[in-house]
Image (cartoon, rainbow, N blue to C red; front, side, top):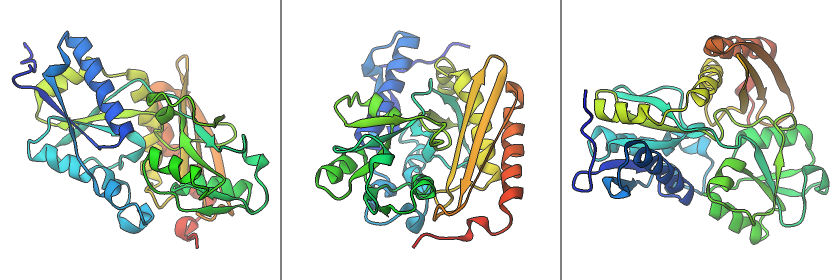
Length: 316
C-alpha cells in the first residue's frame, strides 16, 4: 500500500510539551521522519501543548495527579484530531495506554544515567552533613536519603532550565538531572558528573522517547515503523512490565534498567520506601524475547521481599 505522505500544504502534526527539551525531542522525531521519507521539514508541523504538569509547578506531582498530567492534554488533542502523533519522554508515561491510542514506536535510547549537578561539588560524597539538595523526583529523593539520610532534600519542580536557575540562585547545593536531557540540548557547560547505574539505578525508561498515535491511523503507523528502534523497545518491554506489576506511579520510588548483551537481557530493579529508610534491589537475566515475563517476575520478587504496605510510608 502506498503511504499518503504529508506535504507542506498538509503537514503531519507532531504534538509535544512546550519545554525546550520536549521541543528538541519533537524536532528529532521530525528529522528522522523527514530523512526516512526524503521529505522537507515543512512537511511537518510541531504543535506545542501546555500540560497541567507544566502549568502547576508549586506542588509535588503526587499531590496534583501524577505522571498523567504530562500527557492528558496532548492525548486529548490527538482524540480531537488536532495533532497526528505525540512525542513523549517515556519515563513520564503511565503504563496504562488510553483506549484508541497506541504507543509502539521508540527512538534510539540516549544515555540512561542520572547526572549530579552542582557549581561547587562533583559528587554526593562531597556534600556536607545537612546540605540542601533539590529534586522533584521521589525516586531520586529516596535513593539519596537511603545513602545519605543526613541530607536535607527540598522540592525542585520545573523544567530543566528552571531547575538550573534555582541552583544558580542558591536554593540548593546540588540537584540531579537526566544525562539524556542534557545531551539532547547540547548543554555541555552544565557542571555535571554522570552517575553510573551501579551506584544509582535510573528511572524506568529514562532516556527513551516514545511516539504515540491513534490506533486506526494507518499512515502514521507505517511512517513510524520506519524510525522504530527495536532494541529500545525490547528494553522498555521489560522495564515497563516491571513497573506495571509494581503499580508504579510518581508516588512510588521505583528504579529499573534493562540492558542487552548479545541475545540476553539483564534487568535490574529497585524499590524503596519514600523516606529512603529501606531499599530492596535484585536482578534477573534471560532471553530477550522473555523480557516482559522477566519484568513481571522481578517485580514479584521485590514485592514478596518488601511485604504488604511497603509503599504506604510517606515523606514528611
